[in-house]
Amino acid sequence: MSSLFNLFTSPFLLLTFISLSLSLSSASLITPATGSRSLLRAINDGVDQPDFAVDLNATNFDEVLKDTPATYAIVEFFAHWCPACRNYKPQYEKVARLFNGANAVHPGIILMTRVDCANKINTKLCDKFSVMHYPSLYWGPPSKFVGGGWDGKNDKSEIRPIEDGRTADRLLKWINTQLGSSYSLEDEKYENDHLHSNMSDPIQIARAIYDVEEATAFAFDIIVHHKMIKPDTRATLIKFMQLMVAHHPSRRCRRGSADLLVNFDDLYPSNKWLADKPESENSTGHGLQGKFDICGKEVPRGYWMFCRGSKNDTRGFSCGLWVLLHSLSVRVEDGESQMAFTTTCDFIHQFFMCDECREHFYNMCSRVSTPFTSTRDFVLWLWSTHNEVNMRLKKTEESLKTGDPKFPKTIWPTKHLCSACYNNHDQNEESSSIDWDRDEVFKFITNYYGNMLVSLYKEKDKQHIQMKVNAASEEILQSTNALVVPVGAALGIAVASCLFGALACFWRSRQKNRKPRRR
Image (cartoon, rainbow, N blue to C red; front, side, top):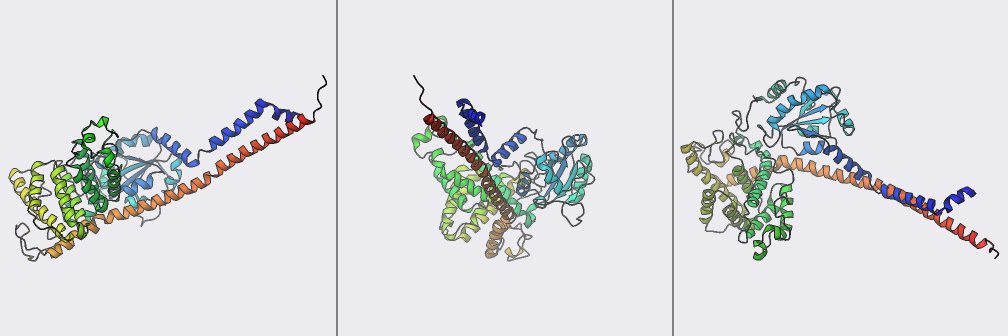
């Protein structure tokens, strides 16, 4: 006991004990959630990213597959130590080149991914899909992989193993058999003779939501790159962003537009003296570019889906911008119709880079003499304007042979899309004086650019929101569990303090009881 007392009464050892207790408490303040995130970042930072196939793991598997606009997904389960897997990677990449990335030859059709089962964080994920050998390939709709699995027995499952895909040629042959396509490893970007005209398929408009996001991001990139935000144009841009905050069909674009509006005055001051200062002298110094992702970090993706042309220089952005304008028009309220009309006209006139196009559009705006009083007025005006533009460009493209042979300009909607829109069903669609049933046209456009446009997106958005809720619940649970660690640390500190206090009292009492030393 005496030796124990001497141990604790040694000032150096006592301070060392307390310091150790404090160090342990500080270390324990790192919650399990923080530690795991740091570990995952370290793991991800050390991995060489493939050129085309997307690396997935247990932390991002559901997230990526929920968000992809692709119709199908292929997941390769492999192990990095497996020689056959390493030899197969170049074969898999040859096929992934066709479908993945900004320069994909056939974008938006198949998302090709891989999961490393040798990574311990993926053990449960690989077990869910009954991976018995490497590499293993699975095929199915992306949504079926989310939260799902494959037991190797369910014949009715939409997830299926790919048994014959051990070379690039054999894998692509398997894909072509499933899709009825004729893709080739030699295919080049946008030169696809087998591209189907999605304008005749009303279901395809659901995929256009991704092109609306792409067009929105692309438009703002142009505006920033060409420094088009000036004292005389900023008011128009603000109004257009207000329109997007309220009525953009994409939730992430609405959120991004709102974030941009909140900070707009700091980025682009209305004071002319501040606005004319060099950007490096401005209070923010960054401007729009690089600071705001108008539709999220995932956008732009670098490719078009609904608006994809059969050639590199056709459709794309112009198509996406039209879809954006139509989708805004069907969502405004009656009392907003005139404001939406003037804002759209001013936005195109001040920010669209094609001189001839914007002047022609603004001339059509100038012909409107009576203010709009209803959503119907604005929707039908934009529809008729779009048809007028199509007819003007149709003549030019036919004479110069510059049009897209797969997507020639035409009067819209076609009879295939809306036969009820035509009062005279025998009338030629190419006629410039079609007898339209404008009530049916309005009904069709409202549904086409409203409910049908966001049908697929809404389902994915619901899944995304649910995933966020689950993640938040998990964070709360982790935070709750993490409280045990700081409380334990605090208890350690309290014990050390009590020991120190007890020892101090004991030492003082001994000092008092000691007899004075004789002189």
